[in-house]
Length: 101
View 1 (cartoon, rainbow, N blue to C red):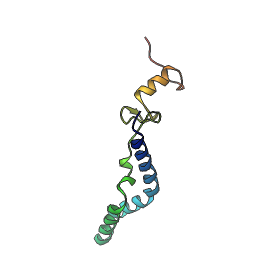
View 2: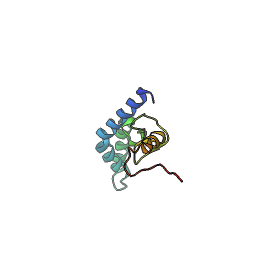
View 3: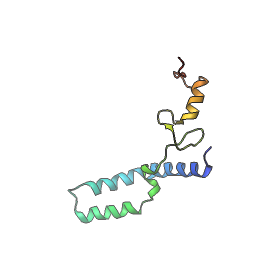
């Protein structure tokens, strides 16, 4: 089980990313647009720098939904490898069976 503080920090990052998504994308569009004047683009860059860093989607870490483990996760199931195997062995994940030959 991961530390509760690291799980909560990741959840806070998700909330911030969702809240500032429109603002960040608008500022990024201005900075990337070559047709806008350089002063306006530079101003947009400064505003983007002032927005919280944790509001960026890149800062969000994929964690297991059950344990909070940060490594060895499957995006499709949002589970770490150990919990995925455990649930698949018990038949809790529909359509997935443990290989046996």
